[in-house]
Amino acid sequence: MNERGQIQNRERRKQIFDMRSLLYGKITPTDLDAMIEYKNTGFVLIEAKYKQDFYQEMGQQLAHERMARALWIANKPTVLIFARHDIANPASDVDLSTCQVTQYYYCGKWHRCNRWTVKQITDSFIRHLDNLIQARQLQFNAQASPEPALHSK
Image 1 (cartoon, rainbow, N blue to C red):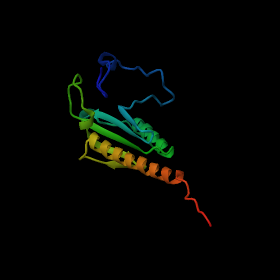
Image 2 (cartoon, one colour):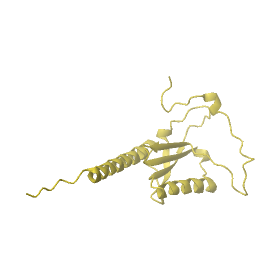
Image 3 (tube, helix red, strand yellow):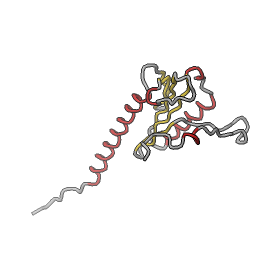
Image 4 (cartoon, rainbow, N blue to C red):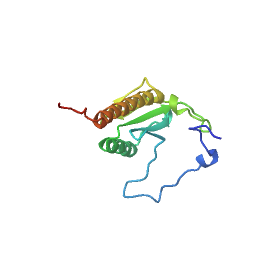
């Protein structure tokens, strides 16, 4: 049995998808390194790169930003995180949780960051989503509870 979050098939993970035939004008596919859909309430989107390769292509950043914004509009709070790591050996695993966040997109704005890890921002956002879930449940319970019966004698 595999541990949650563990790569299931390392050999397949090394396979590169050739996307050259999916060219639409100047538009080509992009990828996302990680996504968490949390309890049908919100999303965490993560893109990470090696520090020397950190140049973020404008098209990729724009696509990710538009996806995050569309999720917000659909009432799914979302944080988009860009992070970097310093593991030079491409054969070595990278613990995504420890990657250093360089910027994140939240509430329709970009925020520069250099003091938090992916795990710290993700944990903070998940706590926010848990608070939203709790508030929605309280609101639902208040609406669902019957009115007290008024008896006149």
